[in-house]
Length: 209
Image (cartoon, rainbow, N blue to C red):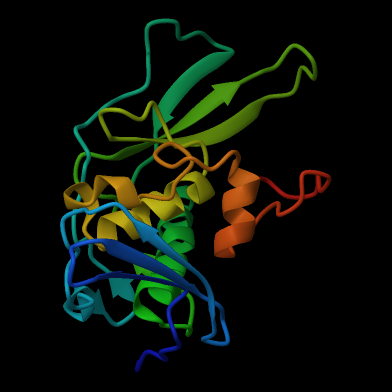
């Protein structure tokens, strides 16, 4: 299947004086803002299109070091289970991240796309709880991996970190726009700014952030 390309949402480039420019581009291809950041190592000069095979995307970099959830206080009403790669939950996670990466990094709009797997050193866990307030069982998916990030609580929290990994990752630490690495005040702000699914308004309670 031939991929359909469109102007990317996020473009990272370097200027001659080694400062890094981040230009946000709307879906119509019109620049919406222009930010010049402090000097950082130059990201990859050409988009790594070789990492896209059909509708599957391989990772350019990883910062995973095999961090894990705290399993010291597990009980029948609070415990973790490793999510297996072949499960629907695992594949849906790869699809949510991959479809956004395909559009924002490579300009491909013929969704869905899938990341080939999680980055090396990452693992996905389901956390089972039974809150006293409701008494009903609850399951949340948490992603673990980087040394300085306890966990990503949703695909949205991880997506901008994934974009960063595809565009240079650890060689450009100041460019990550995820909630854990950036100065953004909330995930809702990141959703709105970068066109992620979920809540775009603090008053909207119908979507997960």
